[in-house]
Length: 259
Image 1 (tube, rainbow, N blue to C red):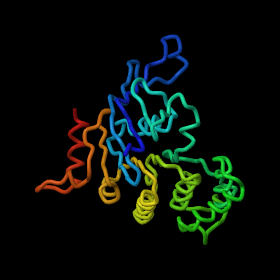
Image 2: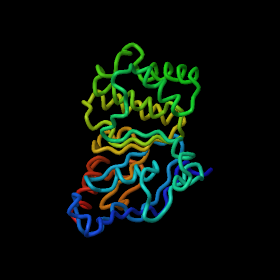
Image 3: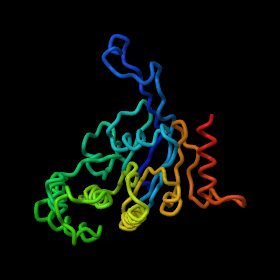
């Protein structure tokens, strides 16, 4: 059986602007920056894959490449055997996406109204969007608190963003630091939702700085350091006699970031 997602030899180089344009732009580096270098991995349906790494490791760049928001310097990304590059919205519209600091909710609408709107945008009929919105509000424990999103807590907004991402039942859900601003209780609830999505037939990739969440929730860990994969496997494969998976992962990332 073919994997749902196939990332092959993916690289991304950010080149500095031409000399004449530099006075007009803020430039972090005057040399090319390799955000990703020859990244290859696969994801199957029903998996929760944790993407971890130090700041600047390339996690957000990788998620944006998979979502088709960036063009790679080299390599390819296939979802269900189709490239996300060159096929326009035909492939990428079938992906669920929540970016870090996502503000893609209308705060002057209720949760249900948001989901109904995004359902129609995703191609559902109004009746189907209404039915799906009600289903997700209940599944994500938001049905008893349907009020203007303006009054939602951070945890409730994350839940609603996740519901928005899966409104059209996409096979692949990409989440970039979704729990960064959440308290431990809300983070734990979000982890339960990730697992629920996978068990419901989705593949989930979630980037996270909280290694305890990655180890406890994810089936696999993909560790990026300096734009390259340093580890790809089950959390249990990180364990040793001297340390658990979380401690081993911290040591791996710290070692790579010092190079």
